[in-house]
Image (cartoon, rainbow, N blue to C red; front, side):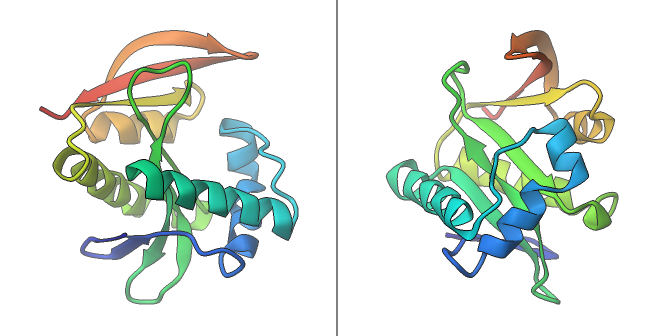
Length: 167
């Protein structure tokens, strides 16, 4: 799968090729603070993550995908749909390296993935969750059209639950 936008290519993660990238992204300060520790500290763990995402994609068209800048081929983040056991709808997830934030890349990727969800997966409603303290993420979701529904408690965190109707 490959989604193309004006500036980005959003594509499947590749085992081994993207393992170091995943380790670095998942261990950035912002990722650990706002998303949490996923314990991806080894090539083996990163490859297991990549394989799980690709398996999800092969099974139902969902999973996280790699975001690259078309012009430079730089790997800048991930974006895709996640199915969480405590949500009825698919949840959109994303993460970018801090140096690529505030440039519109994340919104561009989110909009491309939402378009894919609506037009190819026939999804009618998408969820999004984030901690309230992650103000840039809350702003991005609202800019993409998501509306706050409620705050939910998951583990030791309170998460904002937002929804976007695609119909």
